[in-house]
Image (cartoon, rainbow, N blue to C red):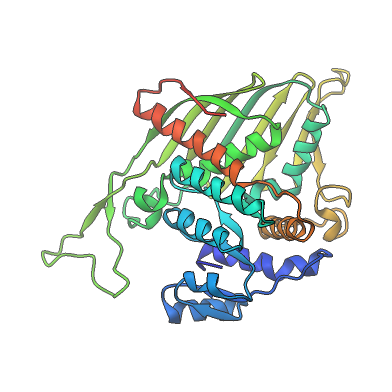
Length: 384
């Protein structure tokens, strides 16, 4: 694994857990963690369960005891690491969004396709696909329970940078993160909408905003102060969006609205998607992640209404591995499900989703949103 912060910790839980919860055909061994700071990486490895440490990710590619590279770094390094790993014959799991640009994502897809011909697998980590309720919603839609889809409305709301004194971390720098709320959380709802509907966005009209243009520079890792000799706090420019709003159209004709913001005061991590069809509707809310709201329009009007489905039955997606019905699971389980699917695909030589090609499709939507916003919300077609 390369990187060991928030995503590194969640991935580590999944690597430790997957073979204990599921009867996997192969057992993962957590061979090595890579990080530039040897002391910090060793502490993380000890805490997270990794056997050894490397201070250069390239060393992982030279090790015969390593078959897979898990990329948990900022987006500016995804392409370089993933392409090198695939060319070295290593399977790859890469955090979302796949890359910082469409051009990078295209190169990653080309490398993934060349590697796949040699039996090397790759996957982009859109973990919300692996929420059992979200997977079950996709199943209902695929089974025709909603009929023709008319509307999709998706929001992802956070508030962690509302305070203008919050420092200029890497997620607020375009050269590191690629984009702001759009790529960080908007990518999730774009992928989830396309996954649940089984359809692709063909065009968007968008606007983005950066509410706080400058932020205090964080203290340097060497312990240097971010305050100049004059006593004035040094500031740096925020070069990504704080919020993105856009409408879209799916290939099947459905209309969609999307909102991704890190300025929804009071909202910590609310992801919600509602899908309306001619025969019914489904609603998924991550704050009630074990539930799905379902409306069946074929029922008599006198008794029809949204009903709550508790997605904890053994025949619901992934749930047979966990607890008796009614005993809920949590956020970390989505990553465990991700690892299960990846390991099974590697063992059986089968295709795995979301693929790098799926990640590229999301990247093209993100680019279209940025282009539309930069051109007064003009409609932007999205390459298939």
